[in-house]
Image (cartoon, rainbow, N blue to C red; front, top):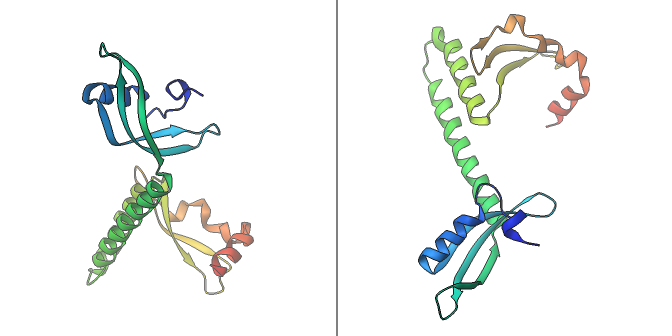
Length: 171
């Protein structure tokens, strides 16, 4: 299989590696994305040097490749969790000693932030009935504006999809 034809991810084309090793004579710790045959992404860390002939033409590259996919995934997960914890801490401090007249506005702003963080088209805040058989949307936010909770059609979700309620209650 030829990596330069179908093995490199579009985010890190092979040409970037070649340009760097040709310019510098070697690469150390060069990170790139490769595509596995099944289409999944492999994160690679490469150390390589250009092996040249007597006239200075590159014959081939010699070096090592390390699969750092698990490390990258762990790093991304940690980054996500840290940012999520920062967001939650920021949100929770806003509601300490808040004027009751500003609660709805603050909730609307929080839903917008949560939606942006998750890349969601909309976010809703649900209130469960005491019996747990119904839920109601108390606040909603789309990317563009607030959603009128009175008009939101998801109010009946508990009655339409009882299996989802059981799953929520079990955790």
